[in-house]
Image 1 (cartoon, protein in one colour):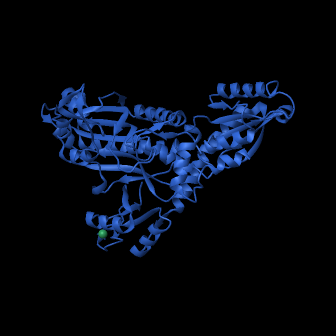
Image 2 (cartoon, helix red, strand yellow):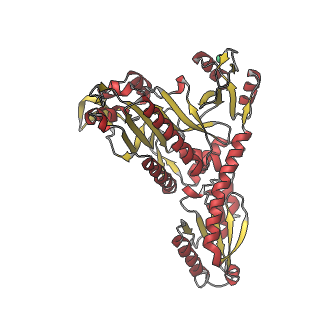
Image 3 (tube, protein in one colour):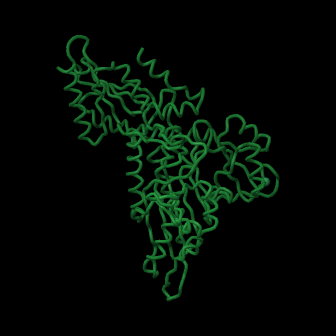
Length: 482
Ligand SMILES: [Zn+2]
């Protein structure tokens, strides 16, 4: 009965995907709404997921030669204005501080929407010679972009992210860096989040304000809409010029460096939720699950659970912890096991370990996988090995399942009629030729709500535009996007 009550609190995914998403975020205690519209509180359970993601991403960023630093939250107005496209792109969503210490400020301060302006102005001070290059710095911080329509994790006014900012002596190096970080994001998404992506260059209308070229990874959500999950920009020499960054090259000639920036944010948590969750709630890939195993002790019919069951459950917890597995013991004596099962299912814990008097007699325990609900009787002696094996299998299987979903929902269309029909019904990725004209892109968006998500890299495929019939140098991925 308790189980039913919990399950009913979540709107079924098939019935209303958007409400399902909000229910899961709130009921699984991933996030809550803060007092200011669009600002969410990341609750401890959600923050533990972020910490696991952050630790892995940080390792990858450092393995590719970058170091972390921290730059200030405020950007003077005049600094932001130096790169024309950049300020035009970002000023509609900027939050400004005009009063400080009770006095009107001489110059308004922007709360960073991103940090190119500030970081590039510091680089102008630090870089003198070719020996100072490349500069490979990342920062973990919060940024603010005033958003009209917000949703926990997916689009919030304030969010957490990492932003990398690099300087290079040559265009080739900057381009290599841009693509290197895109691949870091792609492998992170697939290996850690079990979230498959398509990747490639963005169209001119979707590129970062001030960039030469923007690249992105895009995942496909359960409702057939795409989620941009990470971006990497080749900024050309635009920012170096605007912020006066110069260096003396090997021939003692004054030269402008090339810069890149790249970022991933708490938005990926939204992608994670929508990629794997089901009607019962979250399903977390083991590599980012705050608890990989939850131990639910089953009290004896008669007598006290603290005599045998609970001490054995603690033993199991200690053993798994010693094996490096994140494990939680649910020893609440106010709830029945059935309620606990549903509760941890909703929170997406990969493995549930049930331990009752009968299991103790047989020197075994019961493991239940969250994704398949498969029940496995496991001898106590091989517990650690079995749990590790199952966690690895689940991590793999989730990626396979998500890949199958993406493949099943990626189609080629022969005509614009078919394009419109697919976008009106099941959506997904559509691969189609496109003329690369911004006016045509705008029409497609107006008529189907779909936008160009990416140009897949390195695939020349001449054809004629799906909408207007003009020549198309290459196929692109279209989708409706978050
Ligand atoms: Zn066209």
